[in-house]
Length: 212
Image 1 (tube, one colour):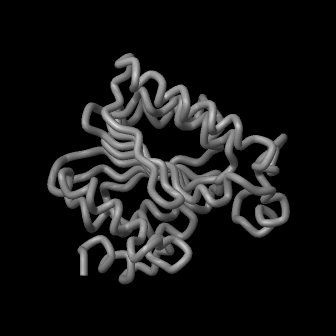
Image 2: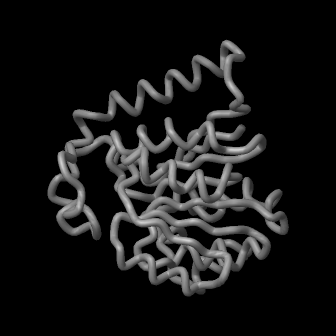
């Protein structure tokens, strides 16, 4: 069993369950393909969406020399800084440029960014547009759970922690999926025209992985 999967089972993160697995490959199986190069390096990792801190524990163990940053709109997630001395949690909306700038001011650039936040298309676009320039060369930007990006999640988000703190949020992703498509098409266009620092734009089941 791969190390990330072992840690995922240990900390009971959903990144390896059946809802996040396609043709025998879970998110963690895919991530391991990209993360092994960073394993023992002093990297910066940011995960948007902390929830119970389970995946932060996976990253903390897998990357023994990394600084682990988390962002969540729920203030109670600040408690997960107790995972270890290399963890720092910010509180705020992933759509708020001031919050994102505060994180960048503290951390500098990132080697890995994982968006497992609101799963709202306009939020994912805003976060990627802001943070991708702050990803280092050879770094990786990941957007998760794209099955949600095609449907109206208005009823779902009533059960998702923290969404009650969002204001003016269009939760009908069917209406806003074209905004995500346009961002991706622009990234691909710039890659084709050699006008970008990106090396690849990859699509896996429910995942977008951008590699610089």
